[in-house]
Image (cartoon, rainbow, N blue to C red):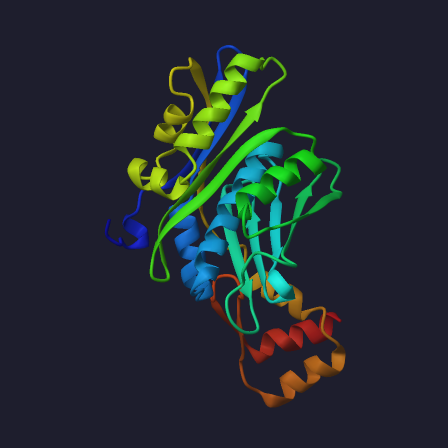
Amino acid sequence: MSTTDLENLPMDRAITAVTHDGSFRVIAVRSTRTARGIVKNQGATDRTVENLADLVSGTVLMRLTMAPGYRVQGIIQGAGGHGTLIGDSWPDGGTRGLVRASTGPVTFGSGARMQVMRTMPNGAMHQGLVEVSNEHRMSGALMNYLLESEQVTSAIGVGCVTSGDEVLLAGGYVVQLLPECSEPPLAVMYERLRNDFADLSRVLAELDADPDRLVAEILHGMRYERTQEYPLDFRCRCSAERVLASLATVGKDELEDMIHKAEPLSISCDYCQQEYQVQTEMLRGLLSAS
């Protein structure tokens, strides 16, 4: 497996499928472009690369599982309170991420917590908090979140393949138990996931993280219908207008000080590193408006 420029990678996407007997709903996602773009822009290294990639895939899966039309954020507080990882997935398929680390990698284990925040139809924010253990990692944390906060029984796997600090493949799946599920198909699915999908990174490598192939493997021997497809990609939400809007919240004295320096103000987006130049005339306009 070799590295490939981001623009030459297959487009990320997710698909959903439902078994004909009404036992399972499956969501599978390829998030390679998204995870690679985020990791590269954040300059992530060491264990942070894998953990950030898994958070990105998991945040996308949570949005598609619970509310595809609403924004979902996954926020990891690292073990021992060291560092923060953020995954931010939007209804248009765009996802961005952020690393805030003082020293060393952001890891899972003792003290690591994941907060999931999703927008409700009425505009309110629903939040849930779970631990992220070293043993069960992101997949286990996501399953606990769905069970505890959403009362959804499911099996979840997220994983990635890396080379150094670069993400080669990223993706994952959710297998959701539906009300019609009976004991025989549940036993078959449990054994299949426990045995054949224990090493998800290996599975992703064998299937090139293709969501159609992943669903076909998960539902091997079962009749199912492919129901939805969702495009995905790494995409920031920043713009020159948003930068000006953020500057409009600073105090009058600070604006006057910026204007007095008579130099363009350079502001970089934390998510994508895009740099914006704010001219003195724009600052005067903000001062007049305030």
